[in-house]
Image (cartoon, rainbow, N blue to C red):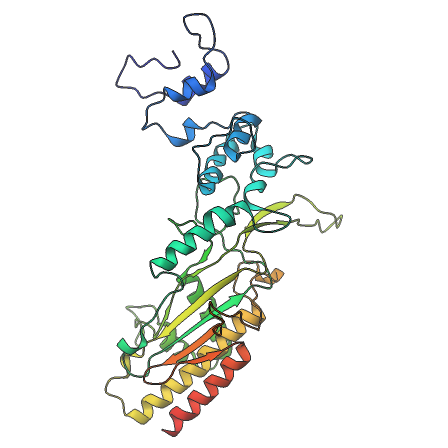
Length: 377
């Protein structure tokens, strides 16, 4: 028998399963049980990683799917990628991570295609985005009519011109450079907090002489020893996560400063150029109550100018990705259309008609028009 289940106090160990796969276990006829027979006797609650070992290249190929005895029950590509994480403690690590130089395979065959979309994009991202759309999660929706006076929302669909990378917090993975993904749908994403941090940096550069404007938009940390009563307040801006529709692999090869030659290539999961996503930001001036309308209008006008400038600066000029010093995370200045040939950008101020735009330049023009109307009103 593959396992000695006579003691109910101890669950089967992975070492037991390994011994049998290497010929240590024998049936009544003196024959070693097959891998499929051993696996079929595992309890249903047994750990997923033990049920699908990665000790040999054939094991890896069965998980990936390019084997004549592939595990057909592994329908999810995301699950296959997760299972390859156990190779970090196996001799098959390099094969799983890089595949065969001549025949390919391995982890790259799941996330990369020389032409067209990768298997992960087709079988994980596209179905997940369709589900999120049906649930009203993609793209995010903001009902400005239900927000306080002078609230507005900016949403735009953008196309990457350079790869995007943001490290995931996955602790058990095939390599250390996994891409940030949504926890349940496994779709590449930018967290709302990442947008807030990136855009705050850009706003700080633009309004270096007026830090109070930045704190008003993004909020300020509470400090019990501070004398300023404005510290410890929430900001007026609310950011939403961005979900991308593609994934790919990129290779970074650091060069030695002495020999000027490449050292050890580093694999990165990235969102490739050409991928699209939606940026969404809401402005809620909750603390305008009690101010004169003229003062409130001027404050909102100044906030619109700074908000639009920081979005343009971050997305089309300086980048919003990790490794942006290498040129990562830039968007095209021209915005792709939405479904139904609708312009990719929308600006909605409460009480005003919806305004659309197809580029960052048009967004700046809209901001100028709105500001002029507010300050003259």
